[in-house]
Length: 203
Image (spheres, rainbow, N blue to C red):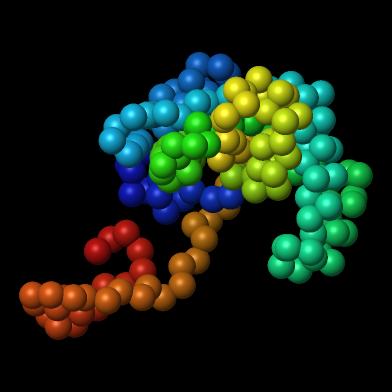
């Protein structure tokens, strides 16, 4: 798949088939993630792959409890309370694999580096006809002592991007884009502004 097509087609997938993703395919998307830029090219990220329903279910359950303890800090707390209190709600949407991108917490730009790798990972998944979704609900508990132990992470490691991977049940159309806000500054700014670039990747 051409890269601009993958950018347009990538969606947050929340409905997955139960089929396992082959280890070789997971490795391909992780290798693609590792080609992301990083500060001073240090490439400090770590990729932890979690498969198997029991551990995924345990992380989901623990993460829900942790999130319920901090609802006041979230927007729409009533909505999240109902969702996280539902015993049938799986924060991983029954996806067969979870890839957690982490890095040493004390290092500058660790979060930015992991986020860049995460975008590569999700675009590579799209190109290989896999679905993905960054699971923010998991981040809090995974950064507790118990969460790090579940992932076998060093004590100083920060889990930045928990991303589920799997085969989507349905292929969704590209998500609509809001109108762009572009400020042109410098030489030929007026001419560039008058070019009238519309949202999308064709310009």
